[in-house]
Length: 73
Image (cartoon, rainbow, N blue to C red):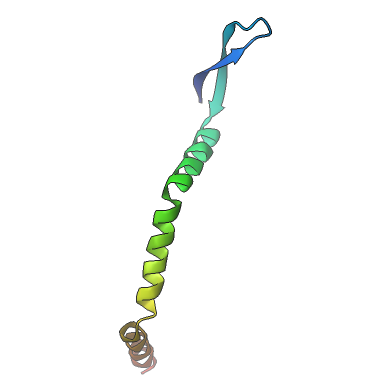
């Protein structure tokens, strides 16, 4: 199944022509993914940094050590 959209093109005589362009699902998915990445890039980076800082806290590291020690016994 193909999705379609209209695209305006200027002909040599400067008249507007409408050409029918077919866009596959894969192309629509790729385009939407690119748009989402452009819009969400800073938000995702900020979230990842918050998670990394949280994992670096002393309490979390101590809990991880205790969890590993308990798993070994």
